Image 1 (cartoon, rainbow, N blue to C red):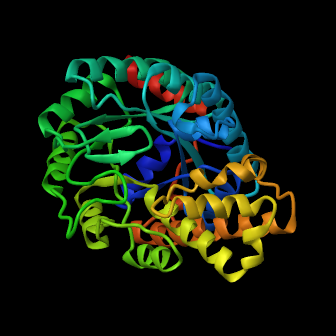
Image 2 (spheres, rainbow, N blue to C red):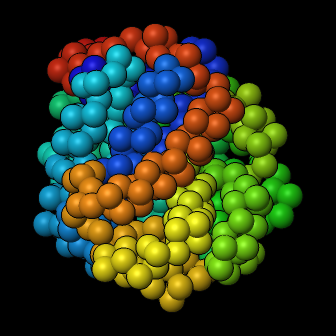
Length: 386
């Protein structure tokens, strides 16, 4: 099925009161694995490439220093891979830019083929955030591309997104922000946190979500509410990584009962990144333990050395540089690299498969009213003229 905008997926989630999982990917084999498991469960697919994921997939191994040109190459490569794999399946697929930091980065994603983008102006003063978000909407909507904004600040670290403290979203500000920008979805701060260390016994302030949603319903405004920093960080994965030579400490996620409560309160899109990182890292450590000859392989041995050097690291991109050709193309250069990619893919499938069931999107592919970018652009034009 051709790629479509995110908006129809959000509308289906709102109508049927489930949450659309948004899963971050950083490699061709991760895209392939996520598509396969969503098709198996007949779930709508929402894949996310973060701003720096575009840089990484543009071939920049030191992705924290990605240039705009890196991001342009990576965005086009990711979108091309998603388009290629999506044609094999009948489930609807959207590709979303996670945490676009500026207009140029967002434009690179749209021009590269993304069907949805996020502009994260949450660190800016309210009016500057509003102005930047509105500028992105004015560029994206005429192309049929969905736009997500953010209001409120999440603590924690994810790629180049960092804050020591949270600032909860004010429901009254949220409604005005949505009305003035025209965003399709809004990331809100209600107690979640970026990264693997979210705290112990996390309790979400779901009343914030409920208040925003009730105000939107009262005003007749559509805007799906988004939960960032929502990985569950299963303790079993952390324990397994540490038993396999890792050294991950202070990790804790959002308990599944809290996730279910958030969905019941009105959350319709849930971002997941850390859980995938943990599962893939565990699988790679397990592979090197079960097949120790790979530790001395000319290529994979370099991956192993990086893992040994960085026992606390759970971002697989730190280990991927020796196998970048396979990462960028999804094609293994040897039988050993094929084993490597299979381990990565199984990690992705484990997390996405379990969570799309927990979020309620399993079996909901047919609930989505498929809409092309061109038709979505016409819808936006008509809505603006009313």
